[in-house]
Length: 338
Image (cartoon, rainbow, N blue to C red; front, top):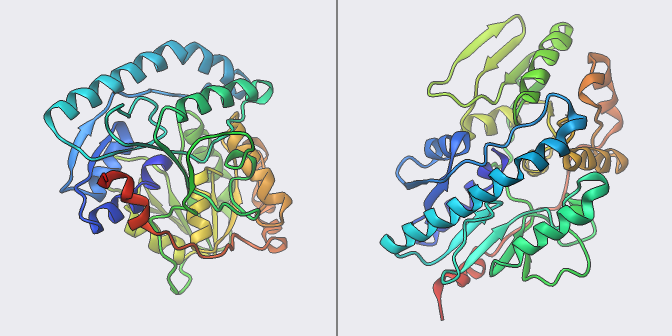
């Protein structure tokens, strides 16, 4: 979902610069983008169907078992794109971590903050594979600052990789607004099952005695939005971008996964946050540790969370970074030919 939401500002800018975007995705990500851009043409892609083991320690084994399916899906992606280009002339492709969404005869861009892919003692291998994929694209756009003070750390900043890299600065669909605080705590869930549900159940139990108003967004994309009230907790199955932007601006503190897109959003809105990384996701664990070590935001492991830990927030600065202005006209020249 994070890959989809961080594409929203790029899609808006493409439209503003007189391009006609075609949205290609699958599953919940496609549903979300359809809700955001109901008038745009849609191309459904084959699904990677990546899920996570109930036991985080077995994550790498499961991903290894899923590799044959992943490779087949990449080939299917390439065929879908090739067939589409035969019937629809296009000027460029922007792929956010869709490995097979490119074409040799069309300017193709890969969007990623993972120039280095953390996977424990196999980081060298996962990084090499990812860099090989990136090198097949004309350009690689990295949604982060190029400077030493940045969001992605060693993920998006690596020496010795000779790809055509462009640092975009953080990408966020949101804008900071000066709104009156309505919620003392905003909970935003995301990520793959079954860990999303595990965290939902734990937070419902642990936050029952929280003093203050809570807005709880489950992150479950369904046909219709549902809203319920339980004591001091307003519960949503999902929110649109506009609704979530307003809710974050109206919240004093945000509790969420430490997904990179979430971090970019909260940095844009200059929010205090408490992070709970998805178990077994090395990237989220690294980002949580990085932000805590820099005095920006506390975190804990999923099994360790309890209400008292939120008191740590007073000792952290929150996510406050310099504003970044991206020259989209220059960025999109790749798609305009000679």
